[in-house]
Length: 413
Ligand code: FE2
Image 1 (tube, helix red, strand yellow):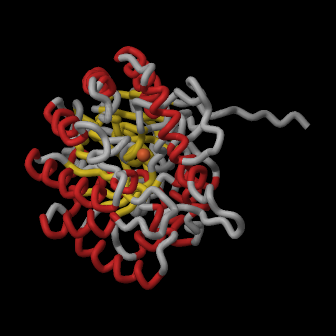
Image 2 (image 1 turned 120 degrees about the horizontal axis):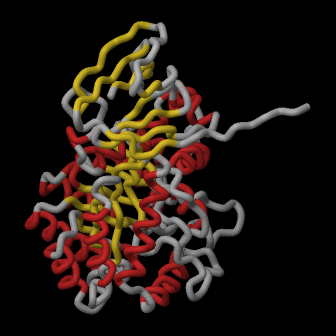
């Protein structure tokens, strides 16, 4: 299979991408003129061809449960955790597998081929984890799934929290999670981070911590995670998700913090639609946005990407799998609609996310890498967001995985 008339980000002209078997065999410059296709070619029609979109932060065990049995009436993160604790009593192995598989289908339909899912392990039976380990295998032809052992109700403040985390890793979790701001005390938050970093170091797992997901400017676990990362030399193997308290830190503290963050080399994930919905809930006016400092992190040369977090669950009632919707919202909410940001905004759902997931040479449009790529509906990043474009074709391991027909509008007057 060849993909012809493709634009590649950051490169002039058009290209032909030659696929042999499951790999990219050649990338050949065509000049500026569109070439006629041969039977079997995929014609990008002078639009962008990019590596697949990445979902770096979602909770597949909780998706498609909003309102079961009760809706989150306050819209707060903490009521979301309460509602989920109720729903968790009703979960079964098959229920989780069915919802997770359906949600993965929604992600695939929007061009996503790499997913990092947090899975709640504060459950003595580890029902969700067992189900997700099976789903990870069953969807391998569609997506690569990384499973985070996520202690939704705490490590230190939940009965047998440490043992459940250890067991989850032994059962096949790829990534160690945490939720230090939810632990009962500051000390428990700190010790939970030391515990989870030890566990990751011992087992070779990556780390992705829900960190400071609160408007409380005194929630300062990010500095603990960053320092543990720096001292252990774990760098880009570690991710801080949310860090929304950073939006409430004063600048003097944040300036000092950025020095440590840069030295640590950690990645950041922001979930802008989720955070704008859940945070700022205790404010009058002026009301905080409740997001981390995405633009500032990016401009400081650190790695940051966007995730969806939820699709129709106790924390967020909307969502359809379309990460481009998250990108557009995030660019607005984070003050990133400036010219330069728009020129490279797809980084936030492609290359930056792939770095966060440590995908390395399994990702990217380069000769010898897996033939995983998307044909988009626009010629550049700016136009892709402005036109609310779509991934039109998703190719995985050299085969077409998804094909979308754009809406056809007829003007009759
Ligand atoms: Fe999350």
